[in-house]
Length: 492
Ligand code: BES
Ligand code: ZN
Ligand code: ZN
Image 1: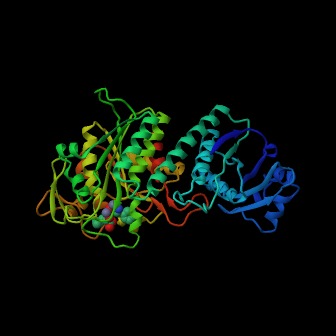
Image 2 (image 1 turned 90 degrees about the vertical axis):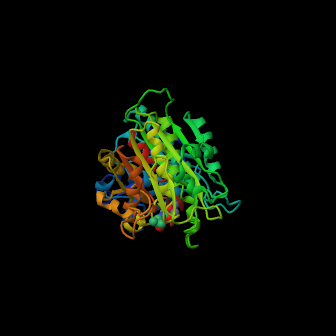
Image 3 (image 1 turned 135 degrees about the horizontal axis):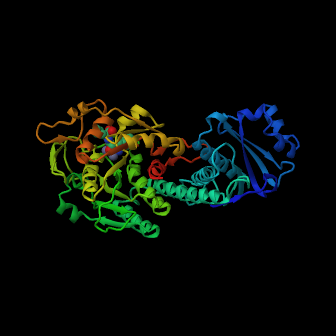
């Protein structure tokens, strides 16, 4: 999709669909007078007849509107002005794209409205357009449902600084593409996206983006004693990979702050010997969504060039049962030296993260954020609206939380009292990999904490946020790419 800025008046823009956001306040006010006059009353007519109410994401198409060079005028409900947060602008830009697709539109214009600064508004519109244009039916050889929009024009008044708008669109394209790229990875079935394939895609993307990249192989993991990670991949024929990405070159000098993003990369989670029930097991192909978010964010950051250096680590494994698989009750010694009793082989995410987190510290990370589809308990607690957030770095958590207005990715901080650690005490080893029935998201976090020790750290549990089962007005069903924008915004 081509995205360009048009400073012109919407009346002059020739396109298949011209999308125009309408606020609830517009119905009684005079702000639509000019559009109404141009279209010879068509806008007030649909508002007056009750055919269209400007509730968020409701739309109405007017064919061959008078006074416009567009084939359709698309009115898009933008809700209440006071609630028009940055994330809403992104979403209605997306709704506009998805409503234009059935009109066989190739070129569309989107009128930016609201009070957001021009740079931010153009970024959000571009991001939303790309996100919405994406389709997850990658393996359909025919009957693809929706055609892509080829050109998206961001209409913003010429009074705004041109340079800001151009830069906004550039950033929006980088973020939109990085998010879609993470979605593609998570949508890939596990027979295609094996740990090796994940690693080779990471390497080729990294070289395009100018990231320093390396993949640690099983042999080196064995030498380093990464036995919690290796315990998870033991049952699989697919070798494990630890993908390591950096926005900087190693020069030996210490960098602070140095953020490390660590993403869970389980390309398929069958549960292992503690095997999962068959129902919905196919969704576990997306159990590498945290890793995909880290890769997407790193590729975006390589282009956005933030002030601080960042590294990304993705332990990539497949969790399967077999004659070689780890069994409940097995004890392994982690890279950090702590021993772990593996009670449940389905609590595998924390095992691979344990070694990756400890290794991030070895590489010099001063701050760590991990992101993982870690626990069903988190979905029970928060549903599909917010990811769970916990950890020891309150400053970073505060920033992550306040960035939600812009990213549109909900995060909710969970309590993290020391006492929760009791649940993972083991009789035979230093700790065990599961607690009892209660507070499963938090006790999983407590397990991870053992491996970051005193490094300021945040854990994001995105189980429940990685997949969208229903589709939305601004996006298709399937992987959401959740976390890419959150991680990038943290460094902006
Ligand atoms: N990958 C799952 C968590 C998950 C559940 C992700 C639902 C997305 C949607 C994870 O590896 C897992 O199986 N966790 C177990 C932990 C339990 C055995 C302590 C769970 O949540 O049931
Ligand atoms: Zn599992
Ligand atoms: Zn898992």
